[in-house]
Amino acid sequence: MRQGLTGRLMGLVLGLSFAVAPAGADEPPARVVSMNLCTDQLAMLVAAPGQLHSVSYLAGDPRGSAMAEEALGYEINRGLAEEIYLMEPDLVIAGSFSTRATVAMLQRLGIPVAVFEPAYSLDEVRDRLARMGAVLGREEAAEGLIADYDRRLEALKAETGHRPSAALYYANGYTSGDRTLAGQILVAAGFENAAVAAGISSGGILPLEVLALLEPDALITGRRYPGASRSEEILDHPVVRALREERANGAITDRDWVCGTPFVLRAIEALGPLRDEIAAD
Image (cartoon, rainbow, N blue to C red; front, side):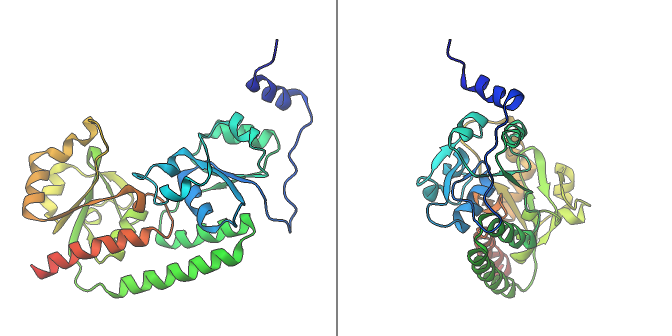
């Protein structure tokens, strides 16, 4: 009987001497596969034409990806070791929270894997671009993106004056403090993060009672996904509804907030009109 693909892969791991030779020190990888939403976008920004072969299926979802249209030009993967192995990559790029079994299998097969940590600050966006440039042998392209990012970020920060308070409030009452990418986006847009006054520096639950006592000038919630979710019922609570009616309010789009890419600048820009609305009042 014909052995299944998974069986052949396990046979390679357990019994055969098999390796995919990594690109030489001075030779950039020619066939790259990314299997993480955030590395997908970094790679699409930095890679040379034809260098990036595949991105994850999440890259094509406009609800979470800032480059959904661009992702249509690449082969899609679902992070499975079998499919990625058959793509014959000489480099795989993954996030630290990507499917760890897949990463481990690919490494055992001798396929080089570059693992990226998430960006938790605006400074780390710069770091992730630089590292992507290094692993792809595209340092000059990355440096150009970093210079443009720095210039635009400084211009956005220069526009801020009075800082109204704002609370980020998501499903299950989750919020983000200043030691998160979302929290730093809020501050860069000219707001004080109300979560900090509640003692939340990273991410955590902000009880409704505390939210009401903070009386933020603005309430910023996440956009709901299709379908029903009990985790989002808290956004319909009378306290939240009252804050929406009495205060300025807005909704964030995950695609510009969730990954440490230059698209965080769009998130900062999008908050400008909300800040100006508060200032006008």
